[in-house]
Image 1 (cartoon, rainbow, N blue to C red):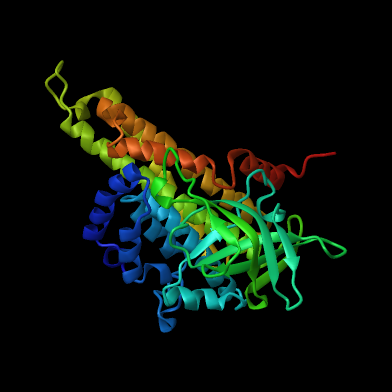
Image 2 (cartoon, rainbow, N blue to C red; image 1 turned 180 degrees about the vertical axis):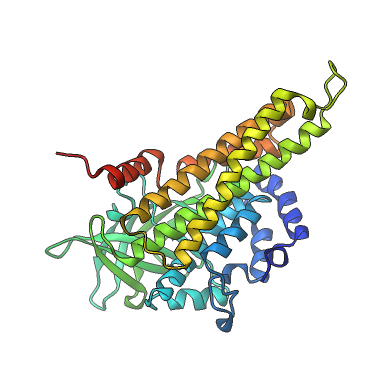
Amino acid sequence: MELAQLLPDELLERCRARAAGYDERNEFFHEDLAELKSRGYLAMFTATNDGGLGFGLQQAAAAQRRLATAAPATALAVNMHLVWTGVAHLLRERGDDSLQYVLAEAASGEVFAFGNSEAGNDSVLFDSNTVATPLADGGYSFTGTKIFTSLSPAWTRLGIFGKDSTGEEPVLVHAFITRDTPGFTIKDDWDTLGMRASQSNTTVLDGVVAPAARVFRKLPVGPNADPLIFAIFACFETLLAAVYTGLGERALQIGMETVQRRMSKKTGRPYSQDPDIRWRLADAAMAMDGLYPQVDAVAGDVDALVNHGAMWFPKLVGLKIRATETARDVVDKAIRVSGGGTYFSGNELGRLYRDVLAGMFHPSDDESAHGTVATAWLGPLED
């Protein structure tokens, strides 16, 4: 399916028109989600013969970039569903059908969310503060607190993980819980500077039970080469990069349009004729031109099962940092040339300025990413 058919201009305009209200009211994007679901958007990774769109990561990233030009917070939250369905797709393409039910349930309307983030856990996927307790039937109960749980008002399936320390060696247990399972509480605490429509509330797990059939991985603590880890990083980082690339793309477009409308009292000419403003926007355009093919190429390599070996993680975290930092710089440049009207809360560029700041908080953060790249090129730090 062509992107213009999946996300036609009229739909994007409706999403863009609603985005300001969601942001002002600190409200979830219910209408956007309903429209996207009706178009099969949440089943993009499910094969066509199973009721989905049959997309790979490259097509999904292109779709998310396009959606983010209209509603970045909507796109960011939808990312978390697409991470899990993308993981299931990537594993299946590599011969692992353990999460095939994720793709099937996404096609039937279930909404998946990502419940792994924990305050103060800078080990991210390689350790957990959440306690996973084994049950006699093979299931697990989980007790802990998850932060930044996007899609909080809408998810029906939540992917979580925790640490089981009952054996000789601790293991990290990955599982899914359902919305109707008792034992968790969603806090109403998402009152943020930007990305407000994502409603990424804190989720408190208080002995919530995942049945044995939904416990899908047990991994050792610390870095490991399990395909699940690669699949999560590949989908998470690439789709994040796509969203922030779309955000930067929209900011550049607004800046270009604005300087052609704004008139200089001094010269009587539009600001698009000012050499300094032209240079600033040209600089932003050149930066964005570098992002588009990078997102496409990295996603394409994932789809093609290219073996980058130990360089895969540096490529993924580098892409995420480059996209989020470039988008932040481009939004800043667009605001600088667009005038004081962008300082008002209802201005779209002003909202993009607040939204883009969230990019620095998503894993991998700047410090972690640079550490990953340095280790790949220079080897680990010596003791």
